[in-house]
Image (cartoon, rainbow, N blue to C red; front, side, top):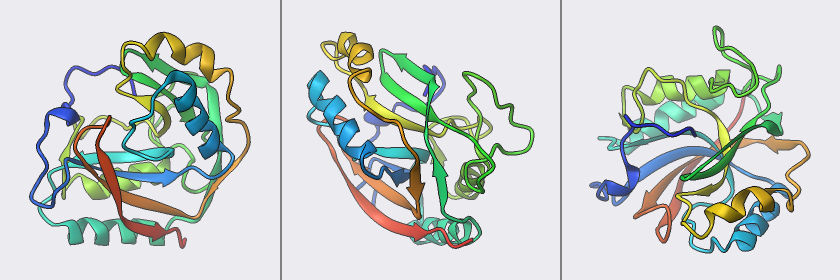
Length: 211
């Protein structure tokens, strides 16, 4: 989640006609990584995050038809099988906005690199499954980033970091254990009400990976 100057400020958007400000497609972290992420939040004093620990696959705003979005995600999930991945500790992005880790790309169906996407240290490319999600969402939603920009699948450790949290992030990442394989059997669509800090979100649908 690098700094970007041409993306929409999600925290400036109003809630839409469905009651949500932005939407996300994500895979919620299993244990023990979920608990370790919450421990990181405790260590830096971040107690008002709207979302649960997750791997972020895509995000967007302003859909005209939520049923059409859900149907498109159902179609994507039908052809992708459950996948395993782990945190790529060499792909840490840390800045004033917060911090996040990339995910390891491998030969598994959902996480492998899409054709033409370079896999390298510090990459910001899409995985094949994530690219399929984005392709399905572009015609149906408004984009927080330019539609032609590859999305970086990642695990956010903290978003919209507050000034007093920023100097605590790097040292406290070393105090939690995010190692280990994470297995995901489904992806979820969420809707967020209000800002990333102090807001709330709802899981709108879950899509089993059936490929």
